[in-house]
Amino acid sequence: MNQKLVIATRESPLALWQANFIKVQLETHHDGLGVELLGMSTRGDRWLQSPLSEVGGKGLFIKELEQSLLDGRADIAVHSMKDVPAQLEPPFKLPVIGFRDDVRDALVTADGRGLADIANGARIGSASLRRQSQLRARRPDLRVEPIRGNVGTRLGKLESGEYDALLLAGAGLKRLNMIDRIAEYLEVEDSLPAAGQGALGIECLAESEHVQALLAPLNDSRVSACVSAERFVSAGLGADCSAPLGAYAELRGDSLHLRAVLASPDGSRLLRAAATGADPVAVAAEVVAALLAQGGAELLDSLDLP
Image 1 (spheres, helix red, strand yellow):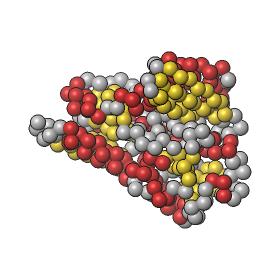
Image 2 (cartoon, rainbow, N blue to C red):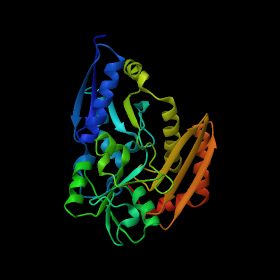
Image 3 (tube, one colour):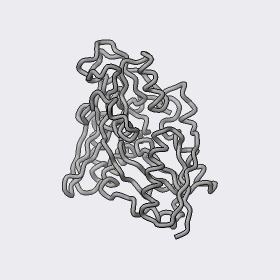
Image 4 (tube, rainbow, N blue to C red):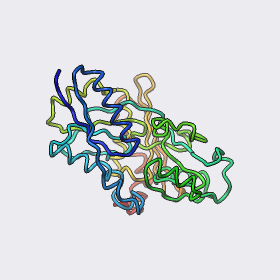
């Protein structure tokens, strides 16, 4: 084989880790395949003045990457699946979903103390309405406030005393070799993950059959089934990935168990639903129906998200 593949990637340390990881996977599966990285800055990386929920959601992180696929500068883009909108617009496709790591949220504190030991009124930084709302439900005494920037930037704000603690994705900290910064993992029962959290996705043009053939060995059908069910919940509710919505699916044998939570930003309302079955679409539809029956549409309408 004498081919070349170009990966479009954001230039944050975590995004570069993910792109390089996929580069190694592709080169391992295909002798002679040359893989290059095209680093890019996205609008989501540049616009740090406001919470993502106020400026268009996490989809802001992928638009420039998708443009590089359209104009031929890159063949694929690598994403954290939790940042990918529930519905991709044509002509894009996600032929690979896999490599799922720890799905839990992680608490990072300057002194290593866990959530139970953080003082009343402590300032907690999180960029996620989902994390913020579930934490407020559990600890309404805390000052949970938005924070933007990559992992290093956020840790710098913690160390400078702007925040007393941070909530981050455990998988991201692990991939950056920062597990030692984690004071406590929040179990999924207390902080249900975002759809796709911990998993990687590879996007390409739907018409690029030769690229999809190269990517085929990287797809994980079990991870894909779980993440697809989670994303069907978001799509069924018409919820952006910046909404205070958690969805997490597990395969138990051949049966898929899906849980979801939709919250008000202040944590005063937590709508929960769960379903089990073999078909990700049917299981997600059952969960969506249960959330809507509890007033999910009205809750989402009240958020005034972009």
